[in-house]
Image 1 (tube, rainbow, N blue to C red):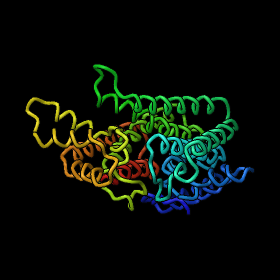
Image 2: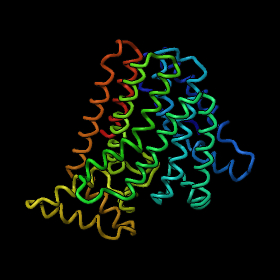
Image 3: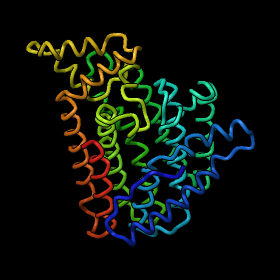
Image 4: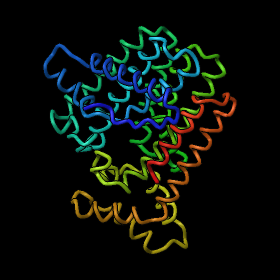
Length: 335
């Protein structure tokens, strides 16, 4: 299966260029995950073959058009960020006990937790080998993003500490778990295309904020879309007690002295045993029809607007328009 990205690019020439470069990234990606060991090879190819949106390499390639986007290092950088993303998916699915990923059984459902975790580690190793060819600065940036990915997952796992605001804590988790790698994707594109430092900086800030917007939109989609549309099982986070933004907003409402009894009842349902599919479906439907979903969507739009504001110093043109369209496409998914 190939990438499922639908390019949100109005300029035909730029769309054709990015499409061609994405095809090269896809080819390089398949080469990068190949293993001599038969089991490692099959497991490593599992998520690549399942397809995906390839949003991170796409952002790298678009950002690179602000400079010399034809440099070979740009494609290498795009492969690095997607390899890193794929590696995290193997680990995330184990931690979340997610049965599906991209419409296919999650790796741990096929080979077990240990093989899935080790396969993720193998992909991290391949990402490290690829980024090493881009030089010490790229290695440092990649290591910093990897560290933030781990810290974001750690902080999500342990939750906010005593007295810490749960919503502020969650936004920091999103910035680390999602924003850091999307920021690196934009940064690498500009950096390896030879853009000046101020352009690299603003694209890094843009990527961080658009990453948070992207994940907030995903929180909406996880409740409002069907598993057939997303390739994931709706409500997995609820079953695993992973609080997403709609849940946090609901809990904040239910904790007020004047809270609606229906809100408190829905929180009680979320806190109950959701191992049975019928109970999980009730919880998903209860949240899906609640105002907190619209609030989360509004937050995604707010973060997207802040991301776009970072692009203001860029000159008008097809590349800036493409970045704006890219931002809109991430948030519009939740509409």
